[in-house]
Image 1: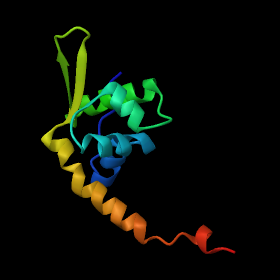
Image 2: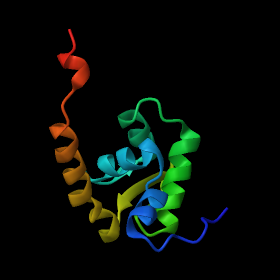
Image 3: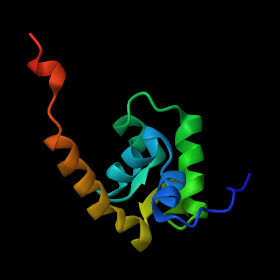
Image 4: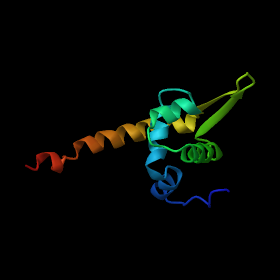
Length: 110
C-alpha cells in the first residue's frame, strides 16, 4: 500500500511521515548507526515486528532509511538513515530539549 499524497504544510507532512510514537524512537535508534532488525526490536521493547516492519518500509519509500541485504548465510539486513534521515537529528535533539523543560506536575504533587 502506498502512502497518500503528502500534505503541503511542513508540520502536517512531518506528522504523516513520523506518525505514532514508534517512528521517532526508531529514528532515535538509527541515529546511533546502522542496525539489524533484531537489534532495533531489542532497543524498542514493546514494538511488534509488524509495526517495526511497517515503519521501516514507510521510511524506505520516503528516502529516510536505506535497507541493505547482504548475500550471506544466514542472510543479514541492515537499516541505516539516509542523509535526509540524518537531518532529523537536530529535530529530535530540539524535541528532547523542549520536553525536558516541561515540569513534571505529577512529581510535584504530594
